[in-house]
Length: 285
Image 1 (cartoon, helix red, strand yellow):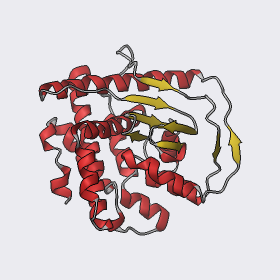
Image 2 (cartoon, one colour):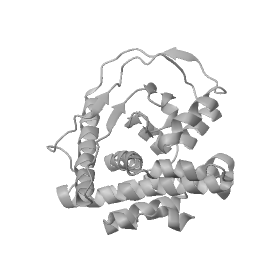
Image 3 (cartoon, rainbow, N blue to C red):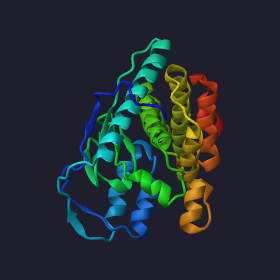
Image 4 (cartoon, rainbow, N blue to C red):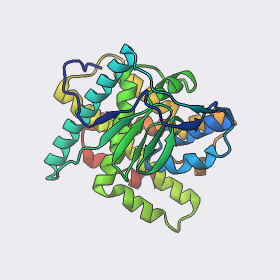
């Protein structure tokens, strides 16, 4: 992705290398399950993680402050640029629809973080907290995505994830998230899960829509970028995760969508550039 020389956002708080207190680490199967359940988990991720972490085995270790490496500093600049791109794109889209875009904040952290939605560890994966309207991300997640789940590396995979989480912020601003929570009340688990899938797929659509607009505005795509995004979407499909962990899939338990669905909706947003084509609820349900 071409990004050097463009505006960097002022809405990012970099807490990497700063002590976050004691947190259980060390992994095991429960640790992997926490990551898989919460990856791209939207605003509900931080609610699920603490429950599973009660069962997680591992040593208690104290984080200590440490200086960032030149590579980490450069990655922080890249993330600031991508966040600025989301601000520009969604500011334009909201303006086109006679609305004003409220920019979210982003927090980069290491291992653990306190949020408006409670405490979270890196095992949560990237997530959006509607209570404080912030995106939280431990960038070490992308190494996990590549090494454990088979996704391609590359900076545009990171850009896709940021755009997906900002998509959840857009859903909060538009009232979509609150409507989904209301609709889920009183429904069976399977029907509630379908609504969750639609919410996640719409965030994938918004990530594709952002890519379309950003390419028109900045000509930022390089060869292989779209493939990197699709590879990340493919790796975190519910069917791919369940097959890897338990050897079979249970469609009624899906909360994020299949690999095919996630790639489809990203592509739909990217190729169409039309926000009106992002009604995932009609097609999923």
